[in-house]
Length: 141
Image 1 (cartoon, helix red, strand yellow):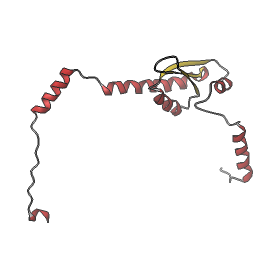
Image 2 (image 1 turned 120 degrees about the vertical axis):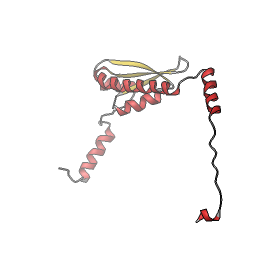
Image 3 (image 1 turned 45 degrees about the vertical axis):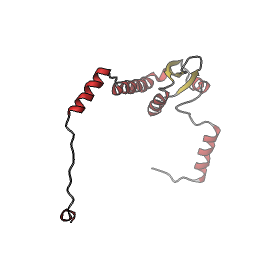
Image 4 (image 1 turned 60 degrees about the vertical axis):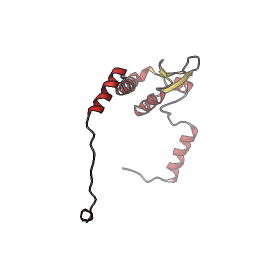
């Protein structure tokens, strides 16, 4: 059963939140992630272009992770650190992220000049449809 929210319940919830005792989830600093997970941290590299897609997928699967930007490479890459204890959640999120990336490259596709010329020739050979309308006063009513 649900209880009515009293001022004492609200006060204790706000105090817990403000004190920082509430468990942090999702993106956090490297130190916070180390403190939260007693096990070893694993990492992967994600490119600068794909970091947005990865962040969406990680939020969806409620994965705790920390980002470190590697400025020494061009373009910059990100190292994503995550707890080895929650590897299964991370594997599911990462496999979906990789699947999204592959789908984008397949959709985009690359055409050769010959393929483009063949497609243009097909379009030129098709007869164009022309609409003809007759305007009369009888058709308006």
